[in-house]
Image 1: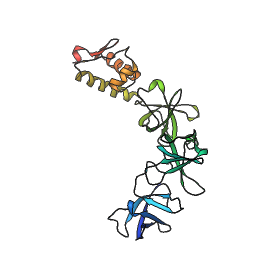
Image 2: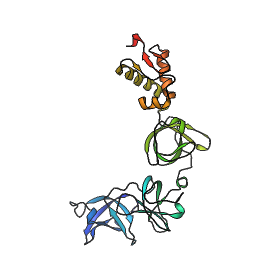
Image 3: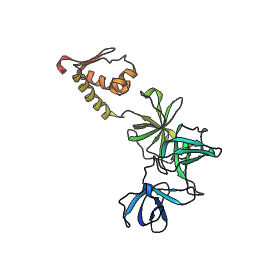
Image 4: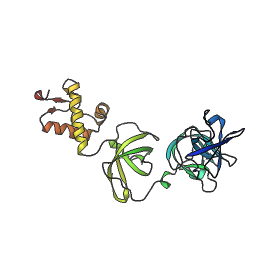
Length: 279
């Protein structure tokens, strides 16, 4: 069965004036010559992306779309009409966003995170910026400390909303983010806390005791490579710490505190340095 809006492996059965005819054994699909491999032979299986053309035919392309159906992605608006907006998805066919599926009115030249799905009425690839309608609300198997893939969706007063593993929604709090984020950014993150009603707090820092051990080693290496001292201490700003070490101030203080308890470093307001015997 051919899945519209996704990759399909189809057999090349014949050529026409318009291109190659591919089939799954039941339906035929046209792959225009402009997108066809020049060395394709009848009988070959080709991995192609399929979509519905404006005339209703199933078409195929070897171009790489920015996203497939059932995925969230950042796309650019290339046209707006009274009925909706059209977004560039990286192939010869733009994707339509009906007016009713726009969380806010879209504008040409702006980028928005959307979800791609097939319209049940005509099987055409369609997009929506009403992301919450497509987020999984069921119980999940995520655990605190898990490493996850994040897609930043938008900024709010609390922080940044992010889609987790293309399935769930979570939040990065402003006071725990030390870099500029924008919609569409893809990041590696970690599950910080799972609250009531499956609300998920996220972090861009590794969570857990192992992280502190790793940070201790990294901090010792940084100190040794910098001649035994770094201009960061208890009163350094979170931004200065992140810009230098790419970790939060809280994580820095935990790692530095552990090294201090082991009498490996001395810490002042704006400096941490190795004690003589640790050099």
